[in-house]
Image 1 (tube, rainbow, N blue to C red):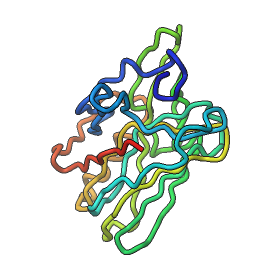
Image 2 (cartoon, rainbow, N blue to C red):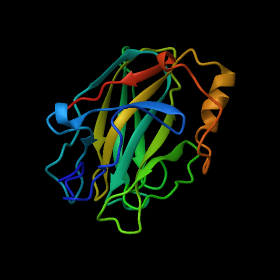
Image 3 (cartoon, rainbow, N blue to C red):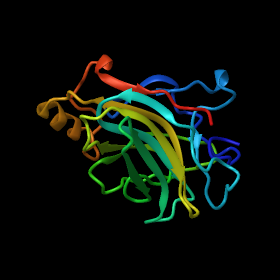
Length: 212
């Protein structure tokens, strides 16, 4: 029933493979070769049987930031739809709250969040969504411990009605310059379709998503 188990309400127009949304490269997995899955969807009040948390997502690199491509469902304003846990090799941990209206919003009839690190990155159509769009958001989280190797990321569900579906994660190399960082920030400006900032694909860190 679609990525959030909502029958015909799905992201069927989302392109797969290596894609660039708002200047950021992401790898969208092919569902046909992955047991029909191309996203990791956490549970919520209306879908309690979905995942409570993900398996650890290996990173094994130092990173200046992570950019999450995701969308919410049954998204209630202000509610924490998920928590993304960053685990370092030295045992340290950092939790990223994913709040509706800040780091994420609903994928159905999406709207821009005012948060300067969140942007509506992709939009498409669905035959059920007459006169509306569907979409995904990208959220940038800056790592304050970029000198430490990130061991893995674990995605946890929230405790309310809102749920989060994570489609892809891309890391930003810890060696990014201040000039490049400013360029990266420009990608999150609202209502800008294309920008001049470009980094070679080899300098981004694609994160392989788990299946459970």
